[in-house]
Length: 129
Image (tube, rainbow, N blue to C red; front, side, top):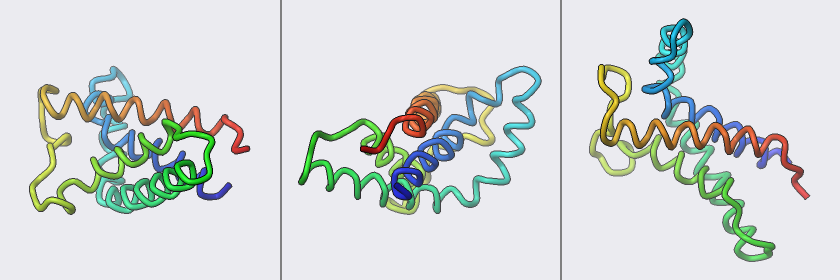
């Protein structure tokens, strides 16, 4: 139960960190969300590790004992990889904090971040058993 909660929270927070490029464009709240994301961004690697561990755990559990692989763990692994990309490969990730235009890889990561937020919220309301 705690691992499921960690996976859902990692999807929500990680999705927020990935989607901040789009969320900054919201009127009235975009600047506040951008400032909050700037404060949380240094801890993004912790969220990435939690997402990878929890998503990997549930992927192994559901592959071995069934019933099937769910989208929660696939999205969690994707969020973890996206947040840890620069640490895993040594190449810099797409910057979402200083860009004035949202295009290319930044837009793709932002849309995936919105999907991760929705999946995390869905996971909070889905029963574990």
